[in-house]
Length: 197
Image (cartoon, rainbow, N blue to C red; front, side, top):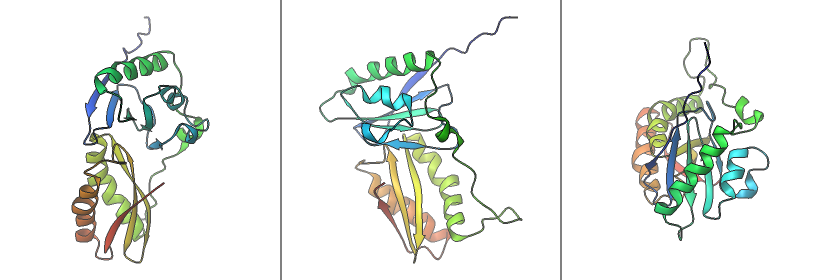
């Protein structure tokens, strides 16, 4: 019996950020990890897909996750014109059998460390567990990602990536949503701040 290759599908979803759009595919791109390229120069051989997308003059940012790419465009470009172009570039790339990201990025994304009983080993692990369980799925639905950076003296520092970077509603999400959740669940958390990557 002949192997039948799965037909590639790509569809777009709106995000809260008017300059970002999420392009979802039925192919896996980067399991267990996310990467946010805010400039063409930041790619540095890490992603052939990002390189191809940045060749489009309207692209200002490329965020790659499990099965989607969030494109941030320049303000002058119109999504009505840009969307078919992005889909064509992605389809040509993925149908060509190219790997979206480097082997180094594919190896990243090990699960958080736990104690022998399977419970989080530290406050940082508890924070990451709550982010993974309650925050990241919702944020990923909007084409973004929240990356845990540090916890020190009651302050949690997070990086806003993908459509969250530069989104008008990201501060509300950060303070009203994430900070409220973490302060309720982890008494040691006093505040949550966004940091640049």
